[in-house]
Length: 245
Length: 203
Image (tube, rainbow over all chains, first blue to last red; front, side):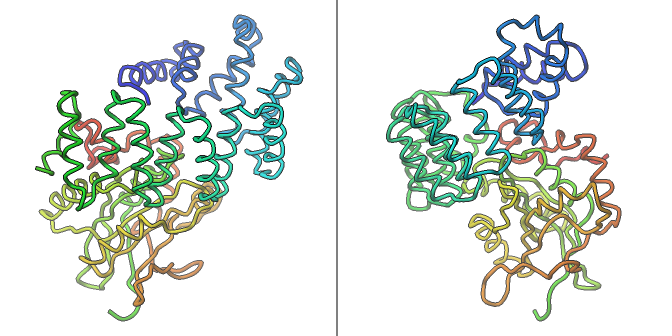
């Protein structure tokens, strides 16, 4: 979830870098910080830094973070050779590293070698059973293969251990909505609201999921609650609220 | 209503929804198709389209609001809702989701020749390579047993694009990343200054 100011800052940097105005490293750091998905640009600008030995050495220890970021972006853009090269460099520098092992697993995923990726992740999990990212990669893999029910199962198991992972709850809710299992989706948002009652987005999303003819009252109650404590409510919800009245 | 209806989609309507799908590559998107039945030859002409959402497609409140606004705007021009377009999240997913079927059924109640168009990702990927003039989507129509059936096989002419060079123009727009300018209902609801009619898109 990105705020409006961060969104404007990001798009300003994006236009600046795209038009050759420099600031590529700031852009890449911002993308990393906000965890947004801008793989084609990350790949382009990241490679331009990495392929230039002067710029690369000026990064210092951040060079390796950039290699990791570019590797993931390359996999997203299906530039698997670029990804492989980045991972090789990281392997040389950090042999026996779990983080690099994760990247190798992701590369197998990107190639579509599901069974091998699954094996790689299982062996990594044996050494480190509480690695959140790998658990989530397994969910992502089943989702990518179209096994939505398996994805739901894995995600539920993950959330039993890591109950505070908000992104995971939101992902589960979205999967339920795509399957039209609204009650279960509403439950996910209930969990989120309980842990973070001050985030209006969760209330709004919850209201959305409970909107059914029978529960119309619940919807307007939730919206009333929101208009009370956030007067900057966007038009979307004012219209919805007006509709309900 | 014997026989199979023919559908003809206008170039701008066609390009708008494909560009919208390309703007949001990692999520499912949908759009509503507007048009009329041609009085001369009973072909359903899809003259325009409005891209709807790129997140939480299955939720009712925003769908309701968007359909109300769209219908109101286009009814004044004598154009009605004739179909629905859906693009699945995954590349190899050719299944018509529950959401698509539900919206399709709803449109069918008001317009019996309603169509559902599903984006064909493999065809879209192959577009730059071949000289295919057929639309990069699959057509589904409702048969007598109330199911949505895929129309025709390869080379079926049930769905055609009005302007034969549409794919070439589309490729051009794709290479210039025109999809950045497409505004859908989701964007409009977040910022009402953005116009979901996309009036300047193809000027």
